[in-house]
Image (cartoon, rainbow, N blue to C red; front, side):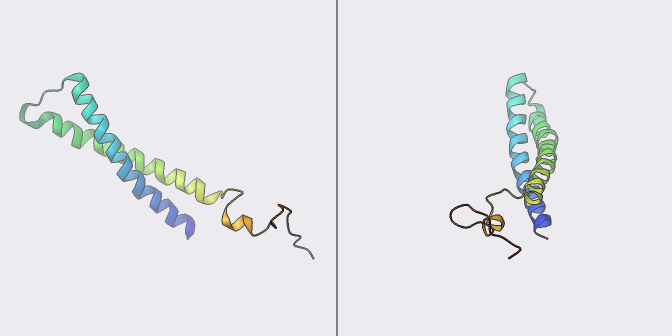
Length: 95
């Protein structure tokens, strides 16, 4: 359950972050390539092309990264620290 919730969190955070990066990339594209602003064409290009693509890529990347991080906890995570004493020696489980 923890892994699924972290994947969902990564999906949401990636969606927001990717949308923001897509927005920035779209504005940079419009400024760099001097896209026409006739009847709001440049705004439609940014908000209907770059922002959704960035949001989708960010959501997928965030879900994958958070899923990998949740499935493979680090050696110094709270769950693994319980197995060691303060000197770094592993507690014996078979005693």
